[in-house]
Image 1 (cartoon, helix red, strand yellow):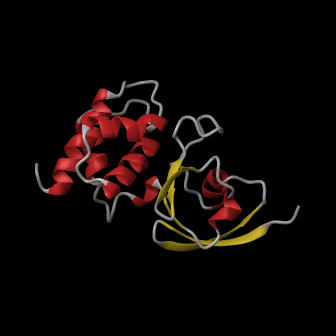
Image 2: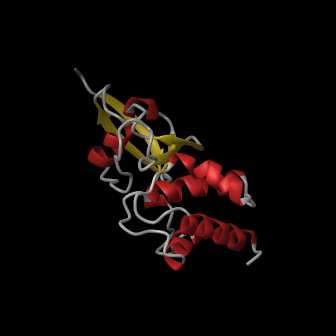
Length: 159
């Protein structure tokens, strides 16, 4: 099967790659672009480890074909920190010990960032609902929720 030329914007940079029409966006990001922060936990869209935003919409990149990225804007975990400065969510995850093994962390961070872009002042229930598609086997969720709440407050200037 012939590969398809794909041009997209990933973390603000124009990129090009050749994708097999059967390859997932996750595989294209990892294998063709070297962006290995997004992880494959389940391959069925149930764990959230591969979360990215595609044209501003949170998606499981294991469920999107790479060729569907043609002309799209994609944001991954690699695009969160700016100029060596951690994003407030990343800092708060560290401060609140909201990570252990780190496998799920990129997906949680991308999902939380997508939430705060839509709703800068979410309730605890809204945060839990939004992050329900992300699974963690190590930490439990309370530290993650607290980190998101703290980052949201800081980002709003309320902290």
